[in-house]
Length: 271
Image (cartoon, rainbow, N blue to C red; front, side):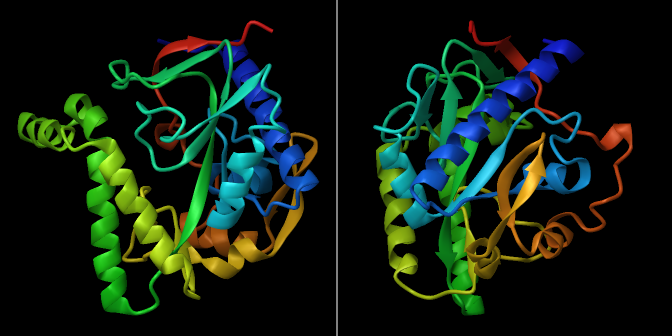
């Protein structure tokens, strides 16, 4: 379905409301978080949303992520929002959490058959440690890739690019998600007891080009940046981060390279 420009603007305002709610909880309880990815790029290049963007991403070190998740039980405005992860929604297959807006819909094309709860969402990425030694990083990255593909398998049965790929995903989708998430947790727990230079979300792709993660020091030192007229947390070394991730990030891409997420179901909240 096609989202009209007016609906797209209203979607971004819903996302901003969700971001401010997450920011409120984090500031109240001294939780370290930062805008990441396209959200941080939007803050620096546009002082808000990238005009064609349709989501918001924030990241937190694992310890802060677990605290935030727990605080959602008591601090989150549950009249409007709910927190979602694989422990709270057994049909949820992603290795990071979401804030969802109640009484709304946002279902990406190819995910209609998945049974998880839906709604306009803000992604919250936990950041786990990556080994320091190159060989261990290779093994760690390979293991993360396998775990990610197992979790993606249910979507891959529809979105796989050919019959062979879809058949492989069909087999992988049989593996119980509880088993896979236990593997993710044990991997994170093991390396989070050690001091490492890099961090990543274990079940999300790392930057291309042979890198294994992001510098941990980026997330340890944050500042406020303007985002849609509000002050939101960002890594102090945002220029270094954005050049690492996007290259010459201040150049606005041509229309042919402006990507958004096609959706099959969309509904703005009732209130």
